[in-house]
Length: 204
Image (cartoon, rainbow, N blue to C red; front, top):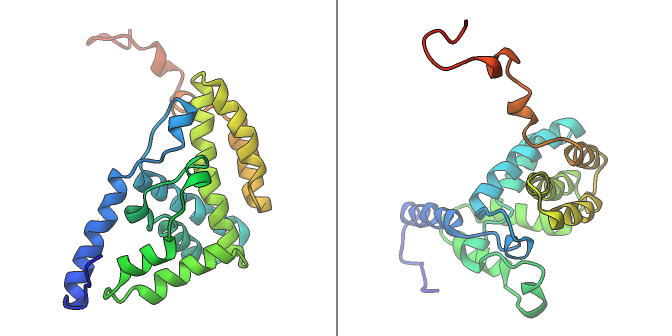
């Protein structure tokens, strides 16, 4: 990468925001093997942060820190791309270096690199909750694909549930695994909604 020393902090922050936008264009590659489903890293990071927020509240952990850990957990993939488990047999990436380059001159180095180190060490409750949030987002996607008829998603789901680290994460994972992904909208409305007819006399 070109040396960015000559750019002031505001320029580097603008650079950084554009780089974050690359996550919208960076596909999560495991779905190539699953055969169905698709998402980008930005979509994944958003729901992971929401899940982390909830897990931290359940566990009595630092909610803000857990949410930040989730929000930034895949930021390096704007530069490295997403390596699935097969890719990693043959390829490696210098993820920390990618983050250092992305953050250089922004004033965010201490915060974001601190989150990254904490995630890598997984010594804190917040880091373990963030790791679980990452898995739970994947588990939600697998359950949806299993409900839609992909038999491989069901197999992956069994394995993914076993990777969850905390009691709060396991409780949610086990509940997700037995919840139909359409219940929130299909069972939510008053049953009369489904009985209504089209037209001005719909209530008759």
